[in-house]
Image (cartoon, rainbow, N blue to C red):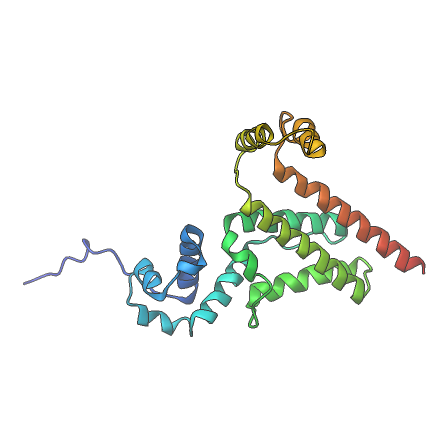
Length: 227
């Protein structure tokens, strides 16, 4: 009697849309969205490229799904009784997520077929603002200014030519050594008295700007309520 030994063969993991999307996100994280191709994605999940089309219709559908995965990683506002705290929580989470998926920044609001995580995210943010007493126009203004700040800061942070406080200080000293202090006194002052101070980290600027925006929105809401 002949028996077949199946113990040496690992079970095949079924290919699903979720698995395809997460693999695509991982590839984009590694080498950017521009270099992502169906061939490379197929290799990553162990199938021929044509098999992927059972799970994604085309490259646009793939990108829609990838952005939905990214939105799904951002924490939704949890305690809307404190709308400022909820918006701060959401902004900080979005910045962390975009730090992991920098390729996604320019696509976050560009998709014309948003997925369920994207829609859930937007609805939760708007719901939090509306429950806090924001009018529909003010909620729209708040959402716009917060996202502009979050995405803009994430994009700027990603493009900086340094990653650590030590690299920041080293580059600042190199630039300062090449720049005539008497011609650019304010840049020299900022570098010496702020950037080169112990503990300086450009990323800390995010919280300062975020608080300014939240405080401004709070004043705008109070003014609208009193009008």
